[in-house]
Image (cartoon, rainbow, N blue to C red; front, side):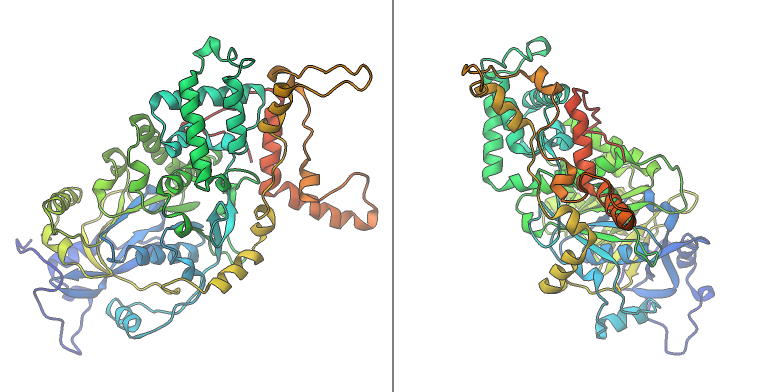
Length: 562
């Protein structure tokens, strides 16, 4: 193999018109690289090989579909084309029947639902990489965290979110996190449902009151000072408008696994641009989505295609100031969720943004250009180069010379071995490279079947309402006129709920026996209600009312069955 290093934009000139450019004419080094991407099974086409500054369209760079659950990294400086790479991969996954989840931090991924617009740049790129480009829109579902922005609201209950993730959002220290865990444990065992922030505040206030302060005495207790920190954090958190993210109906992550009627995978786009100034919140919410999927999905082993590919944008925010225990939980979740058919792609600027324990599990890499303007940039560049396998490229020179829409790629072959490092000119996405009009987006949201299930927030009886009675006592007895004492938490746990049931909240289904003429219609309504995210959220919560402690996971999130 030649000792000469190669960098895009230098070296041999393009072949003269009419010259045959078939694979046998490729340089030996390029042939060796291309051979590493000649997969016989289903694969995604990323682009064409770059060698000595020339795009070689006969040397196609691909990633096996079966390896997309082995996780990946898309990295690069701002403006180098990371978003378009996500779009390109998501399109091809959808076309092959694989559902996709996209975190849309900048608000420009909604265009995946609309056909792309051909122009000179698109035509030129397609010709360079031998792409048969056709403007195509893909089936998409638009979501919005807490309903802030354009999309179906995504909410979580406080109980489901759990103490570990909530502690990160509230920026609690280790001692305060442990105390919050005790509060959740108490609420779980007493059947006090923590649906929203006011429920959690009510339980904390009760546990520091005269009647409640002995409740946690046998398991460490809750200091007044720690409780005060937690309450102040909750108050400030809600004052910043964060209350909308917690409540019911809770979003069922099984919605992310759907396919469209034509067999293509549904692309779920979670708009985060409206909350991008709250990075700790949205990054932790994304981790909740992953953790919820992890707990509920069955093991599938090595399947021929993933069940879902999850793109985690601005991934560095998840790891910033994370405790050792938190990082260990992330690492374990990422490692084990692969066997459940879920692939996770972290999207960030440099590989050093991702801890080594997580980075070591990312077998598929698409590295866009890096900048080296400062000593710190140079250090990051050197660290990035060391994460790639040996190659004939001078990677330090290559990574600083890549153009927009070009990247260094290495993936896992169908046998699970790393492919050779390949400088790649990427294909152009076939959907719209930019957001669709706001009016069109709103129409798509209201037309979605999920809109009816999740759009309307529900505030039913939970811990807050149930603790108001024992703290203040009951009103006078109608017979004796004497004030009746309030019930304690143990009595509350055994009481049936007085709040509205699923039928009353949704307005579906009533009492009585349906007539035969309406049986088929009523049955379909019942099926819709029982299958809805709202019903599942409420039904799961009913189980806490009998005083059974919730089983919690690595992140302290609540397990649930579908």
